[in-house]
Image 1 (cartoon, rainbow, N blue to C red):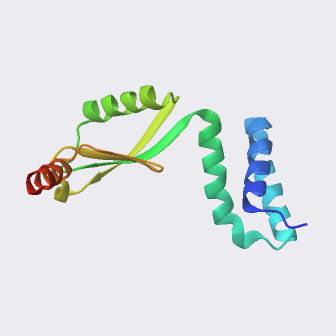
Image 2: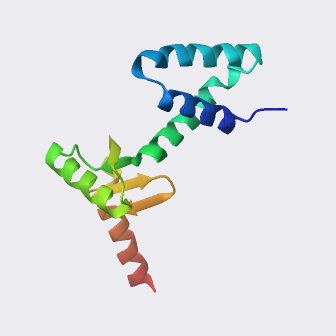
Length: 133
């Protein structure tokens, strides 16, 4: 029977989440040995990505990207994080900041399949579209 990447990741999550801190390294070493034994070590990167998704989902952590026209101060970033936590009923929000001068101003937040576009560029494009109709 072939084990999928999601099954490996779920198994790793269950072992790690049930282990005490001192046993986590042993659990990971055993997991790697199992991957080697089944000649699946080449799937390790994909398993780690899937593991992280499961870990975040189980712990209420939302990951995303915050794009702004300039570097945002920590107070603005914290305010946006707290609003995302409230909006998505999450425990924690982890946003990676990215600067893109093309959006002119405002910000764009990408959370999985959801995009919140509060950029000036987007607003100008909407206005242009309305004026041309």
